[in-house]
Length: 192
Image 1: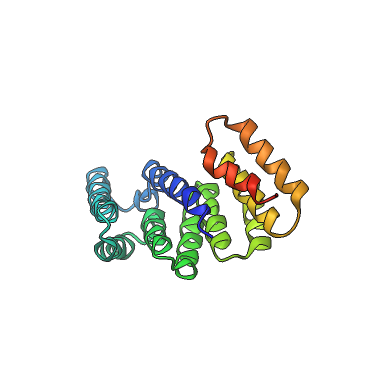
Image 2 (image 1 turned 45 degrees about the vertical axis):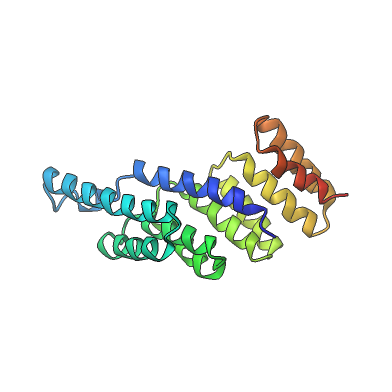
């Protein structure tokens, strides 16, 4: 079942974008001059750009190499772990991706974004009860993403809880009228 791939890609994009907004070097600020911090940030952004360019070109092998370099050079930057996790998810290596998303969440200030990736990964593993709990945690951490409602709704349909599934699909549709219709309709069709 690859329904959450659409969600995963959206969430991954949000996670990678959010990671750029978080300064991974604040812990170094007391030891480095502002110029050194800026230089480190520029190097990190360049390495991430190379990884993303490789991933977008479908060159997963080089993307993984670049993300490994980001993780090695900047172990406190959640974007390296999340980026590598997205590549692994694209290769259907969900079990390998999960600890990377968990590490990114541990390092990040924006925990709900990475929790959403964790939820999508657990869903891909067909562990629907755990996926529901992971989505609930993402909401507890502050997520407002209606895609999570769709994901949880599909998980509810798989655990034979159609009332909860319908409620989530309806809430997702109400929260974002522009939500990916085929994705939402697929969720509703699972209840029939």
